[in-house]
Every structure is written in structure tokens, then in C-alpha cells.
Length: 510
Ligand code: FAD
Ligand code: NAP
Image 1 (cartoon, helix red, strand yellow):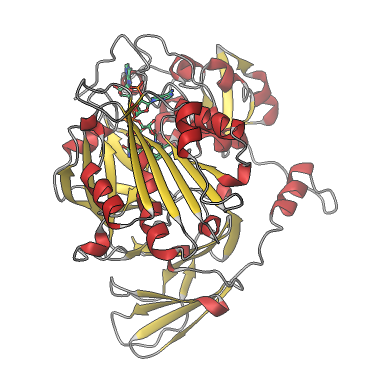
Image 2 (image 1 turned 90 degrees about the horizontal axis):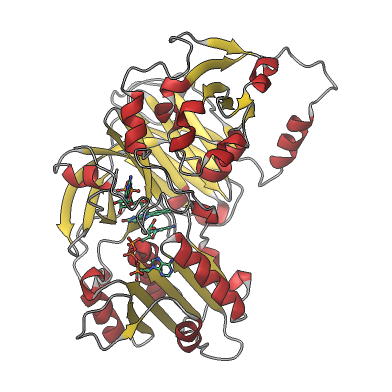
């Protein structure tokens, strides 16, 4: 099904109206939506003007193509002619022109590293950058000097391995004391074994074609006090391995996460339940040969192929319920990932997701996000401001805070929605507030029916100053905020006006 753009593009709630990180997006002309772009790329039109030929592009050549109607940009060594894409770019033409005739990789990574440009721009590919001649020793270019400095982060981990008749144990020595089970991501697919360890903003990768086959299931253990991670693999055949295997791309590397490509694994749709009239709880199952736990406050990217183009959107995993302590544990959390997703009938991605059948597959990336569990340390007052599906990061935060922070005195959620029908998990929230006296929930509606006698309106100084009362003058406070970008931006401004410091506010963006 193709979406027909409505007159009011972008819709008030559209991701196309404002970009993550507070960058404004420009209104696109009629017929210039992402779906229109996909249609154009499938039309067979010669978008590069090069009749399908690919070139090796020199730096001298690249800089010449720096005008709107002749604009080449290099991303990760590949050069694209983006002139035909100008009018379709949600960030506007000027934003694209900032990288005209140059290497736009850093700019691209700052704004939307996760966008699948290879697929979106494949018809605009001009070719590869020509490889530069080697630089004589002692003449390190400026960019490389910065790069070396950027690597001055935590100490690089190392690894070792040993075997018994039936098992292979890989040990990663992280030299860090705060390692958790969610710091490790392991995947074994298509003969490639990948174990990624996340240390602060860095990623340590073991990437190998193993010496012999292993069974699908393996176990991961963290010895937190010494920062040791053990991955125990089961051999398929009880023979001795001469080595662990053959090193693959970036094996044994320790890289800033912002410089690593997103890695995906195919997950199976297990269930889909209605939560409100437009929001559903999706449960995805990881492949048996993947190990991944999404840390609190982080999101993943879901990828589907829509009309032949890979489309990627971010989503924040939730726990399967807010009241999980009171219910039987349904499924272990290292195999299943739950999402609360609102279906926008005229959206690009969510209708496709909604059309998936139980048993179908969706690609899920490794987690990203800058929320740190250490923000909870010694916390006394936790305030959560959520609008619409901006509630999703609050789910795990609520669960964690109420069960794991001994210093916590109160948790208050102010949840903004249009109508009562839009409130996600209303009865669970009311139940939670009833059962745990530290917890309070306040609903604010922007378009209530006449019967509503709760709070009304939008985020405002009056609502916030009444809501954000510290339990004591000097209590340690954290305020988390998430919703449509203009909501979040306005909320942050109001919180600063109310004298909350930067460290006391965490905003969720992409
Ligand atoms: P889009 O195509 O982006 O459209 C959104 C709206 O704009 C719709 O109302 C649509 O009708 C309108 N629109 C689109 N194109 C046009 C057009 N040409 N003309 C007129 N109107 C148009 N969402 C969740 O539901 N759950 C989550 O857990 C979640 N987590 C997120 C985490 C992060 C870090 C971020 C940044 C976002 C998150 N989102 C979440 C939002 C999600 O990423 C998507 O933006 C959302 O699902 C909409 O995607 P879509 O492609 O279906 O809609
Ligand atoms: P929605 O139903 O359209 O809106 C929820 C509430 O927010 C409504 O009361 C709405 O009022 C209000 N609101 C909207 N824009 C506002 C603004 N500019 N100022 C003040 N209040 C405003 O929301 P939704 O469709 O669920 O969208 C949720 C948003 O959260 C999406 O943009 C999604 O990308 C984002 N999100 C981000 C993350 C993250 O981690 N970054 C996670 C999940 C979701 P009105 O009635 O006036 O519209």
C-alpha cells in the first residue's frame, strides 16, 4: 500500500516536522515525501546523469560539484549526486548544501547516523573516492591527529580463549568495574561470530569466522568486580580447535561507538496486542544465536524493506508490563523485546509494521542512547514528563526506579495526551500509583471530552511549578522528558526557567 500525502504535510506529529536534536525541519512541497522519493528512485530515471556508470572520484573533482543543481557529497568513501534529492530532504536544501562538494560523513553522523543512506541514495551513486597515496612517515595529517586523540578514552580490553572437549570459552578482560550483562551483545549468524562489548562511549569488537561450527545457544556471564566477561560456546563436534578462527572486519578493535556502523539481526514477531485505539504492544523474539539486552533509556532501530528500499526508524523497548512484579514472569527478557508503537495510518513505517503477520521478521539494531544508570545514584525525587509515545522510555525507568533505588522517596509522572482514549496503560499506571505510595501519576489532556475533570492543556510554567515539588530543599532530583521534539524543547526551557540545572534534566531524543 502506498501512502497518499495529505494537504497538511508534515502533520503536527510528524517526525518530518522537526528533527532529532532540536534541528528544525522545513515543510516539504506536495509530492516530496519519503515515499515520493522512493517512487522516483524506482522509476528508472537516470538520477546521476551518468547513465549508470560509476567513477573513481578525486578530491579535486568532488569540490567542483558544489552547487544546488550539481551537488556531490561523499559519505564514508562513496560519492552521491544529491541534487535530485534536494527537494525531498526533510532537513531542507540548505542543510544538504553544507556538505556540497565535500566529505559530509561527520555532518551526516551528527544528525542521522542511523538513516540508511546506502539504500535511500543508491540511485544517486556516482562512485568511490579515489584512494589517496600513502603519507610519508612523520607527516600525519590534521584529521588523523584528532582521530588519535579521540581514541584517548578507556583502556582497550583484550581477550583470550580456552577449550574443553565440548566447550569454547572466550574471556574479555575489560579492565572496568561497572560491567553489566547489558554491556555485551553477541551474534552468531552467516558464519560470523560477533561479540561487542560497550565500555562508556566505546565498542570493543571480537569478530571472527570460527574454526568449527558451534551450537546456536550460548551463555554470557559477567564477573562485575573484575570486569571480566565470559562467553561460553558449545562445540557442534567434540574435536580440538587449533585456533579460535579467522579474524573478520574490525576484529579486536576498540572504537568510539559513533564511528561504528549499526549492526542488525532478524527478529521474529511473536505477538501484537492492542493497547489503545492506535497503539500496540509488539513482542519480537531475538534469534537463538543472539544475545542482547537493551539498557534502560536506550532505543534500537527497526528496519523494514518498504517498496524495495530499506527504511529505518527508532523505537524504545519497554518491559512487557508496568506491574511485572505482581504478575507471573511471562518470558525471559534476554530473548524477547517489547515495543509500544503508535500506528500512524498515513505514516511510512508503522502501517508496514502493523501489516506484519505473526512469524514475520523485522531487523533490530544494537541499542543506542545516552541515558546512564548512574544518573539514578542517590536519587530522591524522580519526575517524568511524557507526551504520547514519549512515555516509552519512562516504562523501564519506572520499573527500575521503584525496585532498585533505595534512596528514592517519590516518582511522579505527568503524562500529556490528546484524549483519555490515547493514554497508554492508564489502568496499569493507576494501579501502580495505588500500590506504591512513592508513585504519583497525573494525566493532562489537550483535547479532552466534556466529562474530563482532570488537568487540561499543554506543558506550561503553571503546570510544572505545581508538579515539580522537591521532597526536601536539597533533595537529589532527576527530571526525564520525552515526547514530540517541540514539546521536549519547550519543557527543557521551562525547567531551566524553574532553576533546574542541566544535570537534573535528561531529555530523550534520537
Ligand atoms: P511518518 O511517515 O514519520 O509520519 C508520521 C506522521 O506524519 C503521520 O501522522 C503521518 O500521517 C504524517 N505524514 C507523513 N508523511 C506525510 C505526508 N507526506 N503528508 C502528510 N502527512 C504526512 N514511536 C513509537 O510509537 N514508539 C516508540 O517506542 C518510539 N520510540 C522512539 C525513539 C526515538 C529515539 C525517536 C526519535 C522516535 C521514537 N518513536 C517511537 C517515533 C518513531 O521513530 C517514528 O517516528 C514513528 O513511528 C512514525 O513513523 P512512521 O514512518 O509510521 O510515520
Ligand atoms: P501526540 O499524541 O501527537 O501528542 C501527545 C501530547 O503532546 C498531546 O497532548 C499534544 O497536544 C502534545 N503536544 C504535541 N506537540 C506539542 C508541542 N509542540 N508543545 C506542547 N505540547 C505538544 O504524540 P505522539 O503522536 O504519540 O508522538 C510522540 C512523539 O514522541 C513522537 O514525535 C516520537 O518521535 C517521540 N518519541 C521520542 C522518543 C525518544 O526517545 N526520543 C521516544 C518515543 C517517542 P496536541 O493535542 O496539541 O497535539
